[in-house]
Length: 280
Length: 248
Image (cartoon, rainbow over all chains, first blue to last red; front, side, top):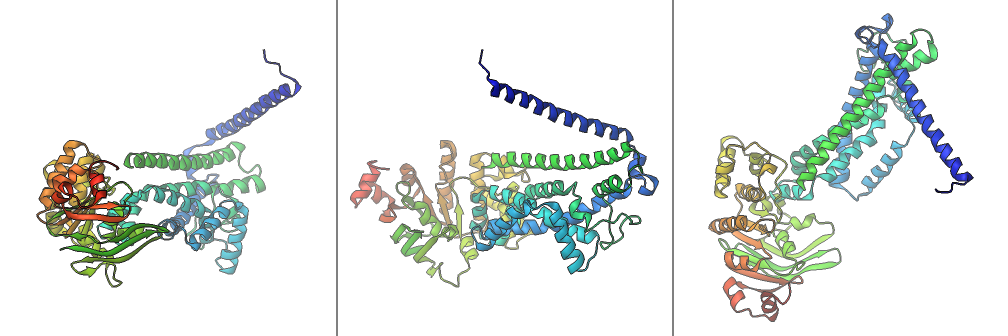
């Protein structure tokens, strides 16, 4: 028998309590989401918010993601190509590296404030889909650049040499050999950075969303309603408007979206790593 | 004479890896470069198509004359040099593309397409003896091929752009004896068309396939001459010692 002193027992008790707390929290979250599941009906998903559904927030979320992704994918890819292929030790690349590390740690509400100041006010875009795209793109950028950088580093040097030795220029090598080989990494970057902002509320709170919007946005200069923002509105300003199970159903949709994006990113990345492992 | 290096020096940062190398490479002959590991064989090879410039901190002085013109002259188009001086690497390094696209790549980047592209790709695959093995699966990934087939594919890729010189960096070191024999046979056939420079660790191989041999030691060209002479009657003590296995 080991002799457990008072401190030993205290630590044991605390660990047990912590474990219980984690399990209880997790169980409660599962319970809440399961109450949401009962309200998750096609009619709820497909009807307008005016009829108690969540169609606009779903479509609005997709609009917002699609636009932000369309901006961040090429910008992030090109930044990564510059950093890895053209100037691995250049001043600009080091600056980019530092900037990305800091950006990744900035709280989202600060991004929201930044976006509001720059895009809505200074550039005069107002609170709209476009401002939201640009703000989210800034948030996604570190994840996008990092993912692409990671796969560019995985493409073996021997493959670049093969292309250059055939008389290809540097750009031809990047365009026709390196980027196609790194394409899954670009995909991972897209999904990963989408997962990062999937549940984002603070960054779009001031930049893209109005609750008073009518219907779906018809141009990038219209405001938009998203799942996370609608959830926030329901809880803060309209308690009792929907029955709780519908609020949780909304949360469940958001949750499922985030999980789906994250798992997709992991799956693509795992597949890709296996493929390269065979290669080298 | 196809290539002549005149006082060729290469530095990687502070280390002086090639010192005053004067080498001659003849058309329709195989030149073997031998020497212990780290003596600069690969660097010498890579300075003949300017691939050495990819290394950070690499510096080259002296001349590499290709048909009399220095390939390091400022006005020279490096992509054209690399088209004329093809290269096969130590480890097969097919591009992450299909079998066909590997051979087609060098042609496509020069704007060759259609009928001409297919004709030249097929002919390159025939020369390396791969056509019958792959003609029904040209669109499979090149990685599905065996290592030996991959190396032959890399040779086909190099000759598809119709180079004048072929540089081979220990092309058989990753291969088994039977495949090695096939590649050596291929080199003997390619000799009828190109000037070939082969870096090899394998002295027997140098003896079997080469016309001329260059012995490199610590970045210096110790001895250069017809292979028979080098192996039977080396002039330098160092060459004699290396060939008799005193060091390696």
